[in-house]
Image: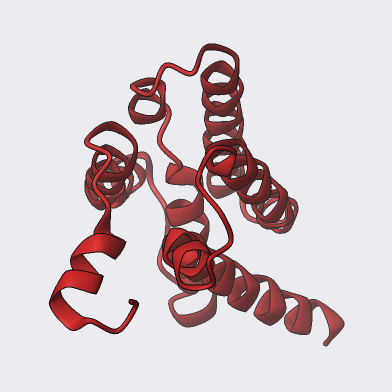
Length: 160
């Protein structure tokens, strides 16, 4: 029973953390918390912190799902370290945070579709599907440096 509660908390916590990760720059602007000079380093550190808990949870998954989680987490950490050392923004495109999407996908599968078997073919298909929106997000935020919060302000006037 305690394990089931941990699964619910971990899944819900990851969803909540991912949501706040999406809107954190908006919140910084809304609450006048200063400029974005140190935003990237802080954002990556906080992401790594909460994703570490997701990684720990994924260590109990079946072998292929577990090793996919470990590989994606390590891949992202390597990218974050390389970015922080070099400040070369395209590295964030080469090392997208696919781990987060994979974790949420597989945790949802475990909860609602536990009989859905993972094969190499299905793994590849799902990773490609999960990568498409993630690459769009990484490109818009880190390469094109799109500022969705400015668009929201202009269109709604809510965040002024």
